[in-house]
Image 1 (spheres, rainbow, N blue to C red):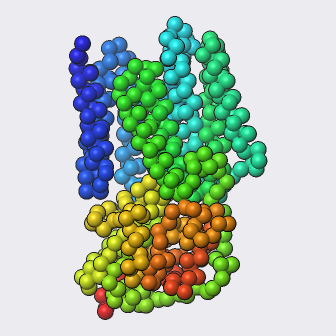
Image 2: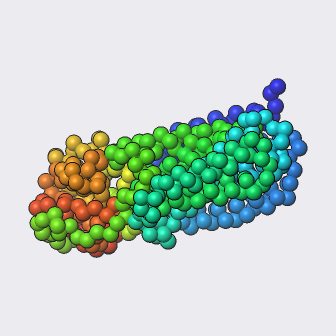
Image 3: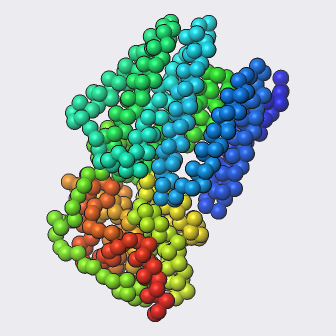
Length: 459
């Protein structure tokens, strides 16, 4: 029988998918996001039309509290803090699913007289949701630098500890499934799974955070879909599967972009170590002024800008776009090389450059741009460390050996904008900095680019 609720759900899902299609490019992303948001509003309305739904006061209170907290937080967040917000919002979703599983356990008196799929789906949602919530909080802490970005481990005991915590949560869940109705067992499931989420993410270094955020996002989606199955909530099932599937695909793509497997990333112990200047690589560092950089850029035929987290921290994207416009006026071709894991979240550089109104056609992914470096006069690297490290190609002893990188060292001249000679988030020395063709412009990226812009205007 076709009901108003079913029609609204179908409309909401259509808007979800249509909205996601808009997220494939910066020009349509805002519209796509708005369309998907309308779909979510319709899905919420459809859910509120469920017969027998009560607790309207609590529902209204939740909507008000969420709106009062969420909208100002989203509007005020700086672009440099967007990865932290993504991790935090993702964690909130996982936490909501875990709490929903707890409520379902209590309302059904320990799943008494429920079909077998209900406790299975609910307990799966409780475990994965709790892992996602607490793991996302740790990821947020690392990105916000509340928690050290380096791997925090207990050595060889780390993997056995992770396995023990997860096994404990599963055992408690099995006991509930076999008829245990003690609420303490469900609390134990949530606590052990939460500790497992913390224990898994703490040993993961900062260099792997983009993959971790994507993986936890997939976990949240899967847990929401499982909870929707237990509650017979079509909106949660469809939305959760969309998030889970897209997050899983993105996680796999990002892991491949780093030439690493997802299990090796989850095993942790890589990235975030403190490293000194790459003097051990041999050679010397050549420092230049903004005037020198401006002259090289002005007389180049083609310039490739390689953005990284340093550009995000300095909020230099608008200054970079001003520089690119000046170069274009002088007849210099400008492109942007985007590495899949540059920054601290998937698509971080694309979002920043789109905010500065950089034409989408100038943004080139790694596979598309790498052949261009050999025909490029100047590669301008702005805060991108690990994704430009030639040791990934040449040094079998390097921790990042085999990771696909941007071939900036193939350009005729390389100019690197950095605050200091500190290593990148992976804590690995970069021999690019002592390459004879490389020059270093030290300082805050935004200030440095503005100085270059002023020098270009004077030429």
